[in-house]
Image (cartoon, rainbow, N blue to C red):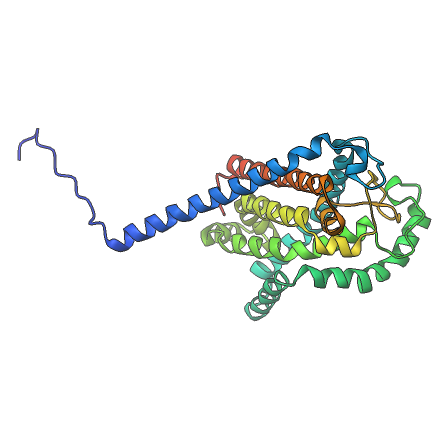
Length: 315
């Protein structure tokens, strides 16, 4: 063989199974895009009449002069409840995940992991019933105590709700609902930490917590963000539990313990859709379009954060 002769490129023989799998993967990806586009088109088309709706067509009382004055309090309540839930859920989820992955004995970790996975499958109606009949009455005396002792702080100013069905109760119920999701994903990410990194930290004299802070948490940072955003998406779209627990009003209010509370887009649709007719149906669908956009933005932002901080490492 002369120096000018290039060696023949060796190509692997393409098996029929590879062709079938590649085609199935392509079809599956395209179906997802088609379904997403179909939902978006439906929401946009059905929402158009709502943007020019009259006050009496938006609500029966005509309290809102236009669609945007109606949807802004709903957007606020949706984001406010979801952020509060995320504030409570993320620290507990990371702590539970670290306990399962690096502290608990193997037998206990296996059982606790199975329980966490089962909690993620509990229907939202069960959480809603628990929130109404157990959790809200349990928290009401604590709310009264907070109002009496910390009423000078705006978030805890009274009067406290007599039933305990407040935005804070909803946020705590949502936190319980999304904790299993964040915990399960974070646990799997922590378990993927390279063993050599952990052993190197321990060999240098680090304690177990120092090893976790130096090796495990930096490795799983991007995955924690992804898990948190997935939990946030669940909290943003939760319907039945919020509708059952909350005593809603279409208001903007930061007070956590009062009986007048902002409601969410999803629960507002669930509560009002059965009685809606005419343009009011389009108004509710338009609020669904707003929720669709919010969820899309949250997911896109999470992907951008993950890509910038870790390039997807640990996911």
